[in-house]
Length: 171
Ligand SMILES: Cc1cc2nc3c(=O)[nH]c(=O)nc-3n(C[C@H](O)[C@H](O)[C@H](O)COP(=O)(O)O)c2cc1C
Image 1 (cartoon, rainbow, N blue to C red):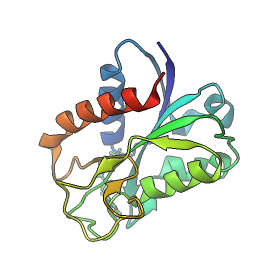
Image 2: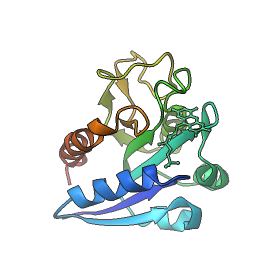
Image 3: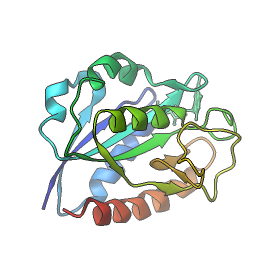
């Protein structure tokens, strides 16, 4: 049994709802949820296993609570930590910026020494461009959720991804 820190920011509640689903499915593990709007850097340091959720807003921008935290985020030492990311976006409404913020979060975690798990295939999504892709563009750098266009797929995606990260965290 491991303790996992789950950090999320959410403007309209979608990312928070997905965070709760992920937490509920991680049965047998302790999940401590932290809204990024009321978290500081020291809280991150308590965990070796982290999950971070971020929606993209305003044409490829970081969600506002994450944006306020961004400087502090860049000072966190992620060495020795395993991080799984999930992002929310709208693939039809913002097809040129789909999930960009998750890609930016991924860059920071890697720059700060973290290891990222939980990459997710792009099959089943339609978009033009995203900063949240792996180099070969075959995967997103974390779970991709679209509550605007594909809400009916959220449950099965979350379930499959939680199984995947439990395996990859290798507690
Ligand atoms: C004004 C506005 C701008 C948005 N910009 C983007 C965007 O650039 N890229 C994207 O993938 N999704 C974009 N979205 C979709 C949101 O990321 C999506 O609705 C998400 O579920 C919101 O999550 P939240 O409720 O946790 O804030 C935008 C939504 C709105 C209303």
